[in-house]
Image 1: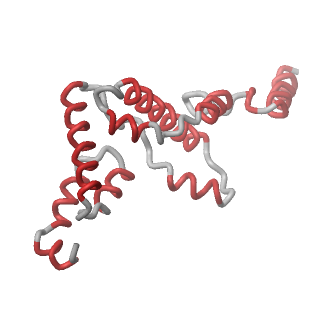
Image 2 (image 1 turned 180 degrees about the horizontal axis):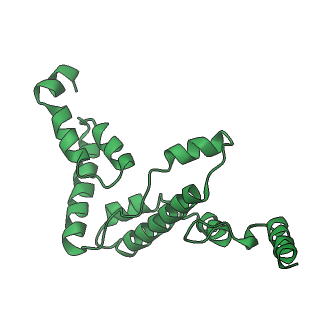
Image 3 (image 1 turned 90 degrees about the vertical axis):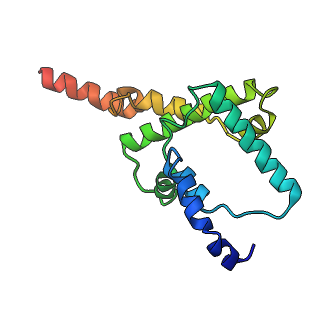
Length: 164
């Protein structure tokens, strides 16, 4: 669509209002980047997804993105081999757990919400990553002795030395 037409229709204001309803920054960013389509198939798909989401929210009051964090900054840091702090890893763990819960809920409701269930199948659960973080870091953000054999051994030696 023509940028001038979008400006005349005050489309950016509409997107800002939509973004204000998003639960986290990633969703808000996606909302503000939406563009209209003139492809009938695409528009029908979007309308079906929107209708299903509206119906789902009306039927289930426990559907939310609460506990989900925008992991892009952490992924950027990890790709640059920067150190992630325990609190960062807990954000990753909680986001992965919440994503798995949303995926499981939506796929169970596939008969009622087929478009949302199809979208949910794209969510990679990454259970092994969440489990490994949980094995190494407790919910307070403390690195556990079980994080590595070397760490466990060193901490054990320190305790023995302190007892002496």
